[in-house]
Length: 307
Image (cartoon, one colour):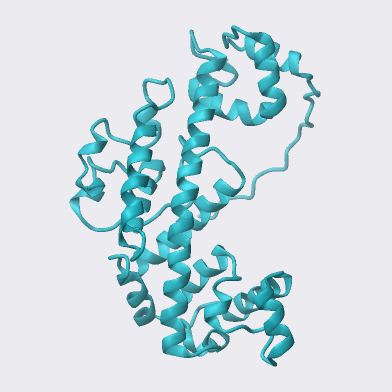
């Protein structure tokens, strides 16, 4: 049975603009304890009220009502924790993304030549190759990289670039789509670099693209339920109770650490990243269910994948 389309909204937006003192007063009316009103006003003048209120959701009993005893600083602590967490996730994503680009470029160029990506026959049959290639050419045209300008002036193939050049220009989203479009033997060879099955690697690329976009927009990570979930590797330490699920932060942190370890040049740095991450996770937001909201078991360090 098909679902009926949602009815159009019938009400208009009625909320009015509030100055910073009024914003703080609204939070107080909703049960938030504010010890230093002026400091709260200064913070909201830097961090938009709407961004701050998103961190308050974990501390509420229902819509617009904070739990008894919650302070402005409790919510700010969640914001600060998330900011530090996002920096660590971004750092790991950078290393993983660079390695993904190198691996795809090296393998695809070896198997299909410099411009093999321009031939739909080198991809899975249902891959929307023409649309993807058009997007790549648009990204190339927008690029201000000196090596792209040189290629445009020197070679007739422009706006097509050799794949080992193109992978440095294309967005991570376009790279993820390329991975999804690879024929299985190609996908298998690239995925084996990370000890993953081909279609698990494809799902991981898609998920990390989603997380990267969240980080780029400084969006809340710590208690978010993923809209795009990764497929986790096989093995008991990726299953409950070690990893409760794949829809929250913890599974992604563990996955990023695994990928860093498997990157040929990433191993030594992976241990340092893990140490800094664990130090942060040892001081979660001041909330009894903080670990659960991140998808973490109480004994999360017992997972041998952290070795």
